[in-house]
Amino acid sequence: MEYNTSIPSYSPTLGANKILKGWRTSLSSTTVVSFPYSVRSDVQFYSYTIDKYEYAYLPLTGTYSLTKCVGTVDITTIPTTYDDGTHGAKNVTEIGTEAFKGTAITSMIIPSTITKISERTFAECASLGTLYIPTSVTSILEGAIYGDSSLSIYCQVASKPSTWNDYWNVVHYFSEATYHSSADTFNKNIVWGYTH
Image (cartoon, rainbow, N blue to C red; front, side, top):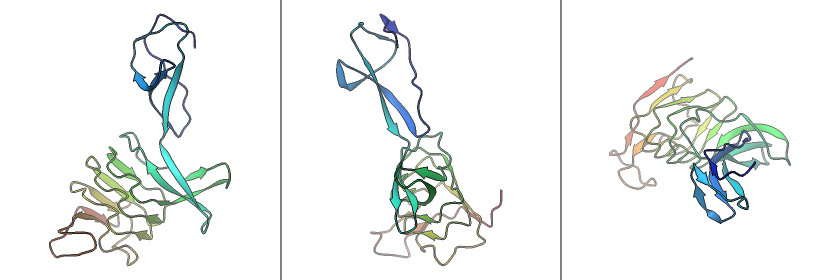
């Protein structure tokens, strides 16, 4: 990049798993600059990026778990495969604990490679309006969907499988998760047997 006295904006080429958070300069490694930005010829720019997704390899199944997502509004599904450079390209079969907790996602279509959704995966996602769960999901753990009172859930299965925890979609625990009470509330906006 050629340095000018004033740079109106600049966008780097990003990989599929990267999000640009901002620009830093050689003058400060912690301050994120905004454009337009006046620079001297001896100032260097560094793009500040983060991964959209983080993964963990699951050696027992030879697949990956998505362990974290930045959850921006443009994310509406997750990748079906991942390659960590060591174990090769494999399916993503699990969504890990708190992977989307508190993120800004508005809609999520879970791909058919996913078989397990962990605890608090979609907890406190205030903007999440729709969630689509395919028949491939055979395990949903307690509190996987927690605190999302306005959420509509579309499930391809005709009814809740016995392998899904009874507290998979809690809106509010009357007390702690380890104590269950008749005062606990659940998300009732569920469409069973949904096909799209």
